[in-house]
Length: 248
Length: 300
Image (tube, rainbow over all chains, first blue to last red; front, side, top):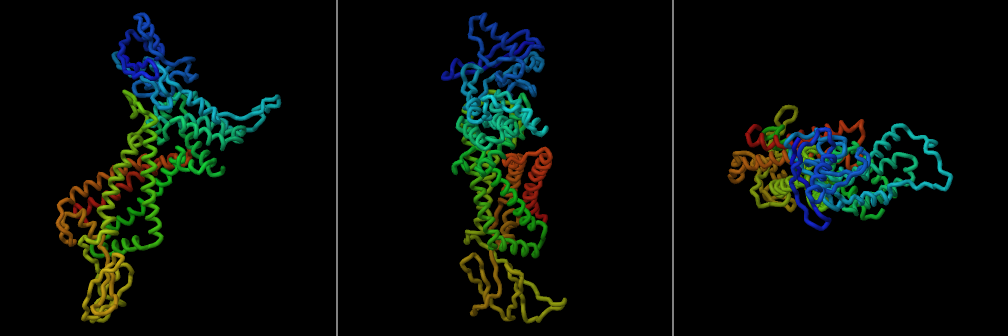
C-alpha cells in the first residue's frame, strides 16, 4: 500500500519543529509500524536526508521504548499493543498518517519523535522500590503467603512498561496511571506495605514537581495503555494517599 | 505530611473537587424537591405551600448552615477547578496537530471545565434572578401574600364576625375583628407584618411572594402576579432549560468521577455507581427543566 506520512520533525530540543509530509510506497500489511518507519528512513538516508529519529528497542512489545502518537492516539489505533506491535494492515492504501511525539511538559522532545521520559525514572527513584537487606539473609519471596487475588492484582499493575502512553493520551498530560501502577504493585504485597505511606507521598510529590497534570478521570489512559493497566490502580493510589495523609 | 499538601497536592485537590461536588449533588436533590412544589401543587394552596416552604428555608438555622456550606462548596469547587485547569493546560504547552480524543474518552469528561464555567454563569444569573430578589432587593414590587380563609371547627363555620388570616410562616390562624383596619408595616428582616390600625396587635405576617415571583418570571402573563409586563419569558425559559442540559453533561461525568477521585472503585460497585450517576445526571436536570417549561406553557 502507498501512504502519506505527516511526521513531526524537530532537530533539537530548542528548535521549533514542524510537520513534514513524506510519501511511502509498497508497504506490506504484515510490516510492523516501526518497520514501515525503517523503510522511510532507508529512503531518506539514500537521498542524503536526515532519517526520522524515534525510540525503539525490543520490538516485541515489552520494553516500553517506542512512543509514537499515531493518528491522534498513543501507539496508534489498535488496542493493547505498542507501536512496534501495530501492524500496517490496520491502515488502508492511500491513508494519511499523522505521527507525532508524546506531548507533555514533563517529556521534553529530544529530537523528532524521541522524548525524554526520565521524569518517570525520577518518580521511581522517589519511592518505587522496597528496601530489602541483601547482606546474605534475604527471605525467599515464596516463603511469604500472599492471597492469590492480591498477587494477581500486583502482577497486573507490574505489567506497566513505563512507555508513557498514559501521559501522552491524557488531555492533562497526567502520569496518574503510571504512578498508580507502580504504587499499587508494591502496596498490594506484604513486602511493599511496610513503606507504603512514605512511598505514595514521595512518588506523588515528585510526580507533581515534574510538571505532570492532574487526573480528571476521563479514562483515556486506560483505553490507550498497551498493557491494559486499570483505572482501579488510580483509585487505589487515591486511597493510599488519603490514608497516608490522614495517618501520617 | 505538611499542611499545605492538603490544598496543594494534585490528589488532594481532587478530593476537594469530589467532596464539594458530591455535596452540591445532595444540594441539587433538596433544591429540586423544594422546587417541584411549584408544579405539583396548583392554585392558591400551592402558592401558600411554596411560600411557607420558602420562609422555612430562609429562616431555619440548620438550613442556614447548609446554605453557607453550599455557597462555600460552589466557590471552592470553582476556584479548585480553575487551579486544576491552569495546571493541566501548563502540563501540555504544545498540543497535537491531530488528536483523536473521541477514541478513548467521552466529550463530557474532556470538557468539565467548560461545562462548569457555563454552570457558573447560570448560577450567577439564577442568583440575580431569584436569590438576590428574595434576600436583598427590597425595591422590586413584591406583592404581599396573605392567605385568607374561614375558620371551621367540626365542619361548622366559627363566628361570622371574625375573618381569619393565615400566618404564612407558621400554620396557625389569627382572628381579626370584624371592623378590621389593617396597616402594612415593613420590619427589618424583609417581613411585612400586618397590624390592626392604631394598635400593636399583630394579626398576620406576610413576606415576599416567591411563588408569584417564579410564575411571573417564566409565565407569559405576568400582570396577574402584580409584576411589570415582561416579554422575555421565552428567553428566560430557554436559558434555564439549556443550562440544565449543560448541568446534565457535567453530572454525566462528574458524579461517578467523584467516587473514583475518593478512591471508591470496586468491581462489585462500579456498575452501580456509574449507572446511578447517569440516572442522576438525567433525572435531576430534567426535573429542574420541567418547572420553567410547564410554567411557560401555562400548564399549572
